[in-house]
Length: 207
Image (cartoon, rainbow, N blue to C red; front, side, top):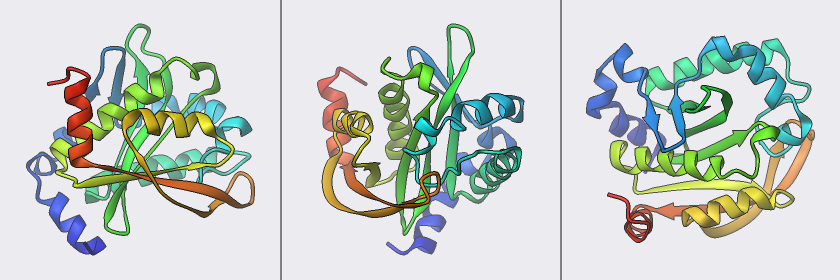
């Protein structure tokens, strides 16, 4: 499917006609709240994603990460959501409302790409899997996607494990530019089909 066809497909979905209410959509899991990025989290975003050990695992995040980068991120997040080309969500812990990272979907080459990150203090607690699974539910059930793809750098096996648990299947490896490292890094690309996600949810007892 061509990129413009994909954009037209999602642009006409009912929730995108809700204006500000639609753009303020919130998603929930047992432990987490996902909602569109808010500028009130500016300082926390810069501190967490400015950690090199976080930034080096992401393709499009610069290091050092400055206020200018944060400003650009919030502008781009608003624009992509309004155009029906991207659905970025900030991740908050329900227990204390702490902002702990981000997850999102964006149209790229006519298909949806999943991305996610967490501040280093929140690694190893299952939050990435939980947030990504909810975002995938949004992709398949609300956006009617047939498949979603995601990539992980070869030296970030934690991310590969998250995608494996979600049911993603390896497709190929190729170099991908990483802004923080200033070079291309070998990236493993994976794909999750709609039917595979549905089967996994049933096996987990999801509705």
